[in-house]
Image (cartoon, rainbow, N blue to C red; front, top):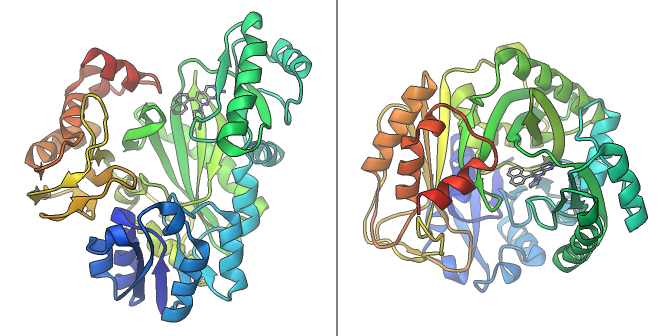
Amino acid sequence: MKKVLIANRGEIALRIHRACQEMGIRTVAVHSTADASAMHVRLADESVCIGPPPAKESYLNKAAILSAAHITGADAIHPGYGFLAENADFAEMVEAHGLIFIGPKPEHIRTMGDKIAAKETMRRLGVPLVPGSPGPVASVDEAFAIAQEIGFPVLIKAAAGGGGRGMKVARAEEQLEEAYRTARAEAKAAFGDDTVYIEKYLDRPRHIELQILADAHGHVVHFGERDCSLQRRHQKLVEEAGSPALDPAERDALGATVTAALRQLGYRSAGTLEFLWQDGQFAFIEMNTRLQVEHPVTEMVCGIDLVREQIRIAAGEELGYSQEDIVFQGHAIECRITAEDPVTFAPCPGKVTTYHAPGGLGVRVDSALYSGYTVPPHYDSLVAKLIVHASTRAQAIARMQRCLREMVVDGISTTIPLHQRIMADPEFQAGDYTIHWLERFVARSS
Ligand code: MV4
């Protein structure tokens, strides 16, 4: 692989560029007209403008991206996260054009995009699931029958969903019909597909996800878990590796189950399996067939470059190490800094007059910011990921607090003050939280 086209923008485009540089691979940036002076364009060896600011006409424009790869002579395309990263049609088109898609096989992207098919696949491979309907639930009567069987409360989910859209809770029988009809209508409106399924509703779980890598030669390893319970409206704010709730034996057991399953599936590239964890039990909910925003916390505790590994795997190379070679050292935390009001979460694009990144031992900042940069209003509000690593969780929190004080982003509002309040909170410091903690924290601290 000599030249990679990076089909993304912002910090993740820089992240992929960095891995390519260290491997002696040249990079092609693509950008919208709104991003002409973005750092990912400036750093890349070449760049191609692929359209106007709306993502639909630029970063989601498959034909424009394939044309850019063709005219620059790129061998491969890395999609990053978001945009086309989990679009099976795009992955197929990339391969049909004789290029390498740096990611999973299109069939696996497609299967995991259908949440019912994903669950059925994992059930067959021996991964524990949340109890629920074995497939789509096509009528109110069927919904009643399933709810009767598994017991209330139940959750109705969209098959095409993920990320929390089109979900409705029914706490008791009298709420079921309304929840079922609303979930279907919302799924239809959001995804153009009203297929829904039902699960037992877990009322106070943690969100724990497992990072895996699989090569094209049947080797599969895991890199431990991330705790991503600190979310607001399905947007993650803080992630940790490992989870404050897990012990090494629980991690090893989950890792063994998951790696065996993916070996059987013939999976390739990086992937993440999402679980709900409650009362000491794991239940699979979804699989993400992409590199994730929060991958750096895993890299910090494992000392591995996941993007480099994705590229090596896509080039057909073997992993070259086994599970026993992967050791977890210390603790890592990531704070997602967004251009938003820290109390109302209103987006806050605009010009960054002064930017200063924190530094020092165990500190990593993944960001495409620079002094004088204007955050455009057209895309995600993530402007920096602040990641720290230390030998214990308490030391990682202290280091994060020091970094949040050191970081300067003048000219726009950011969520830095909110992260400072979270890091200082006794419950957070005790590791005592579920997926509902942050929503309540935000409500009581505003
Ligand atoms: C659940 C659940 C409780 N019980 N499933 C939300 C996003 C999607 N990925 C799955 N989600 C949930 N599924 C059952 N059976 C609670 C959630 C959920 C959630 C999950 C992870 C992180 C934050 C969350 C916030 C609200 C609801």
